[in-house]
Length: 545
Image (cartoon, rainbow, N blue to C red; front, side):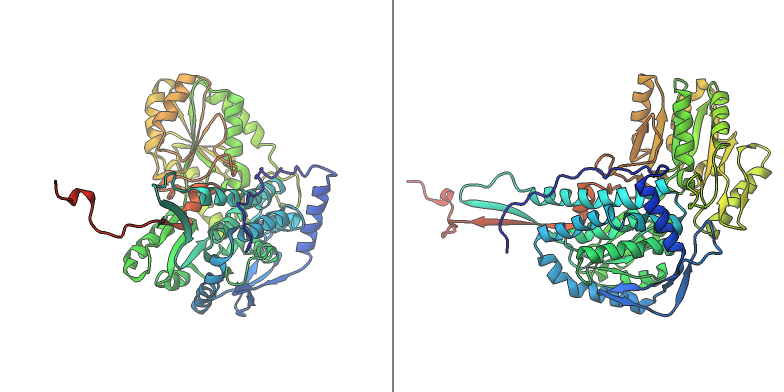
């Protein structure tokens, strides 16, 4: 085995390509989109390094063009989940014995593959499968996933370097970070391919073996990510990719004695049910499972009377409508002073009127489709209810059309009640609800912002008055795990703003930081004594002479 204290390359955030007209990256992405649309692919599960096909097929269609078939994937059952667990446990001994620098090299290679030969392919898959425009795909499936891999390798080395600062005379104290005893279940969402790649890889990087279940609506890009992992050298069985329904996976996984942890991003309700199930089954496990989850948000923008109107407007429209409001961090409730409302309203209406909506293949479209018909119908229901409510005003948008794709117009709703349903419930779509308050009531509004929802994921304040900024920053300290001053509440960058929230938004284990990786190891203290005592008698036991 190699000997040495190795330093990994210092990570830097992957530069975001701009995909401007006549750029090299634009041409490559257009070609990748054309290639993907020109064929229908057959996507297997990956269990123990083998491609597994059940024959039970489900279709993959672009949300913005649901008549077009991209391909099919093979849906699994409880037997496939069991096989994935068995494959993971079979791979465990060799994987955790592999020197850390070789684990690091695998994921650094994966990052370089994504940055190079797979960049256009993974971005095209995210655009088509999840209806993201070119820029939203670039910052997600390329840049953020690359950053997760490179920065997590760096954080891993920092964790291994942490050692007891003191060893007494004749003693050497050491600390080792062991993988968890068992397997980790990675349950990933549709909205970010970067999250889909990070949840299994961060646990695997620390020497764990993983069963990975992505959302059905993210399988198209998940397949590309798995291809990258395999080409990078992730050994067979270390990460196993299965497509099954949640209850089927849970019935097998949460009853297995070797279940050691879950890495989750999804809805609060699902996460709470998972936690409850784990609690009920706690006596079945060899070890107490690690429960790491990032769930929903009802993210706010609080605008102070001293705010810059242009800054406030852009924070609202970008924060609320980029990727159709389907980010956990998306702005969905705003509090605007009456003195600024006319100017902000005018700018919002003017800018939103210039939004182009349509398929991702047309790079002029800022707005694309929501993820599926279930989401479309839910959003349409809330919009229709708002239209029927005489106390609610539709400022812009309010229309929708599912004939070609799941298209919902960017919609701004003005309400008179700060506790109106769309101010409180997570919608996960391009709907922003605005409450206009009297300037003199600002102090009360801060309390309303803090108490309105069960969530505490992201939030933004817009102000020029520094006393007001300091006051809001303190009083809203528990209202958001990621807090933004004079910016939109979205766009956390790995290595710069570790991401996660508390309250109903999750365990706040901060993806993209050392904090998260510490959840996937179990420390062992080793004390070695070089000249140990050979007599039980301590000096105080000697008789006075």
